[in-house]
Amino acid sequence: MKAIRGFKDILPAESALWRHIESEAFRVFSTYGFSEIRLPILEKTELFSRSIGEGTDIVEKEMYSFKDRRGDGLTLRPEGTAPAVRAYIENKLHVKPVTKLYYTGPMFRYERPQKGRYRQFYQIGAEVLGDADPKVDAETIEMLIKYFRIIGIKDAVLNINSLGCSGCRPGYKLELLRFLGARMDSLCENCQRRVEENPLRALDCKSQGCVEATEDAPSMVDQLCRPCFEHFEGVTGFLMQLDVNYVLNSRMVRGLDYYTRTTFEITGPNLGAQNTIAAGGRYDKLVSELGGPDTPCFGFAIGMERLSIVLSSTGGFGASLSSPIFFFVSMGKPTRKKAMALVAEMRDGGFRVETAYIEGSPKKAMKRADKLGAVYTIILGEDELSKGVVSVKEMATADQSFVPYGELILWLNATLTGMG
Ligand code: HAM
Image (cartoon, rainbow, N blue to C red; front, side, top):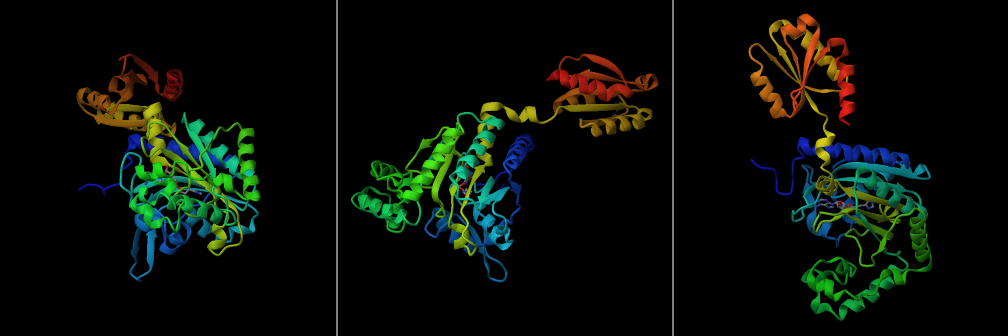
């Protein structure tokens, strides 16, 4: 039996890196005032169709939706922003002037699987609810870039854009529609069908015809109304002051309908076509559209699988993250009790210990230690027992030391520090 197409196991060799990625994110985000929210994996289908938008790829063709036994339409969450907003409204978190939330967990989209693109994938997301200030956009992006630097992502590129608001975007859409109308034959079938409803999608389309047809398309940033223009200037100004480099990308429209004003994507190296490692933006109308009070918001989500690919390809992180294995061999029944006590002491001290309690020759046990990749084998035979010591053998060099019981933990700590 195999896992479902687009779903994958995260095996221990990789999961140490995942844990590291997550815990560093939580540590860094908390220094900016974010707290964790844990959200359900299933939500009402309507939550996503109303927020992400009926005409988007996600809602049109990628959601895992079904009816439960009562006939209610439910969907495995394709993203975390809509559930976070639902929870924010339902739990009246808006009584506080600003709420900063982060979350992590699996999301589900029925996309065509390829490198960096899965049908179940994990995101780490963060949302700031209740602040319209451009400094929030810049500071949150700066936090993300700093986090990437800390975990060792080099060569991340930040693309930003502004999609304006309900005041200025309709005018831009009309102008874009006029532009696309004259090039209709070059657009792909999908874009031809939905161009009337949402011409912005054509800017995001990867098909050759659409890319060429939209090369000289009018840009949203040139059409922003005064308040949106000033907001965008504020964001870029803060970014510069925070020493964050960015590329202005007027073609970046994002695949979800809830965005207003700032949008951004960060790309990483060694990923091929699916190279966006994090993306997000401002969504000032979503809370009120879902029945809450008027609440300007900004947020992003990181793709965990993509981060993991980048880090594994550049750093060889995995191996250095899992702590070394110690293999403890107790030889002969009389040594067992003492061996068990010493193993317990080592584990309490944070060491990772595998054990073998054997009677005869240690050959098989040593082979097993080798196969497991143990760095040290610790042997307690009857001889050692009578002297109150253990024999510690470094597997790589076969160097052997005799260490008194009471000094074992101290000795191991000192030796490990020496290993760097
Ligand atoms: P998104 O751009 O749809 O935005 O996804 C964010 C990130 O999730 C992507 O940049 C990518 O790294 C990862 N991702 C998306 N789809 C897949 C997939 N099929 N396989 C692997 N990774 C994937 C959102 O989801 C918004 N909720 C972000 C946001 C938060 N905006 C405001 N707040």
